[in-house]
Image (cartoon, rainbow, N blue to C red):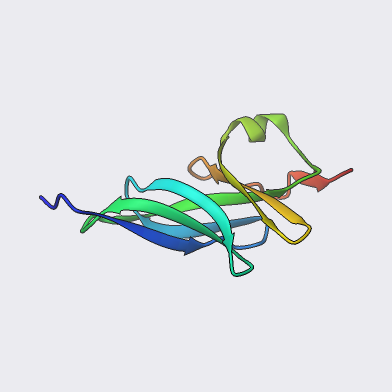
Length: 104
């Protein structure tokens, strides 16, 4: 068994939803802007299988269905100039599918 960990950096796609291939049991550490691009850092065990994890990006002022919102796990917030994005991880198979509308 490998007892080593590693921290990986992943790009955050600026769009409604996206998927990332990550080692299983990865722990998300932070989401921030680096050189004008949103990035996410996660710690992982070395040598473990990968899985697909689903993420949703919600902008400040968007209205979100409350049932859907309760199925999301907050990851972090980042800013790029005037843009403020809030990153959430979706439960298995539950993407936003157009259930957000921009308001305010």
